[in-house]
Length: 177
Image 1 (cartoon, rainbow, N blue to C red):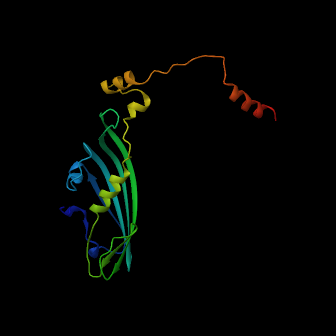
Image 2: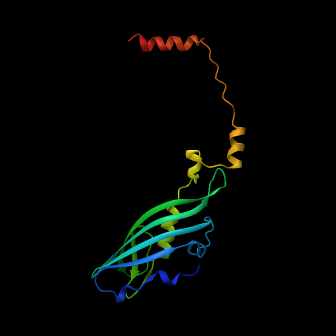
Image 3: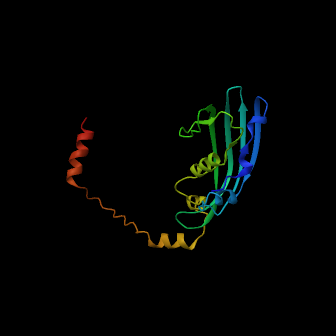
C-alpha cells in the first residue's frame, strides 16, 4: 500500500487557524488501496485543518459520484455520495488511531496523511444495496429487468365472496364493541 504523498498535510509549517486543502478523487485513488468495486469515481474533497496551539481539528467533506453496477441488473450507474468526517488530532507519546474520532500522533511529528481517512469515509458512504435509479422509477430498459418481470410469479386474484368462518368470528369481536 503506497502512501499517497499528495494527501500529506505538513502542519508544522502552518500558522495557527484554519487551512483548506482541496482534492479531486478519481478511481486511481481507490485502485491504490486495491479497491476495485467502482467502475469510476468523481469526488470533490474539502479538508479543513484547524491548527491550535496544542491540538488540531480536521474536517473532511466529500461530495460526488461513484460509478457502480446495479445489484439487480448489472447496469452501471453513477451513485451520488456525500459524507463528512470530523477528527481531533492530539499529540502524545506514540501514534494511536484506534479511536474513530481522535488521532494521536507523536510529539515532533510534522505531517499527517489523510488518504486512509478519505478512503474509509468514501467506501462507507456508498449504500450497501446498489440499485439503479431507473429500476425504482421504471425508466431503465434492460434485458435483465424484462426477464425478471417475465419470471415473476403471476398473482392470481380470486374474487370470492366466501370468507373463512374463523375470521368472521374474529371480526365480530372487533365490531361488537
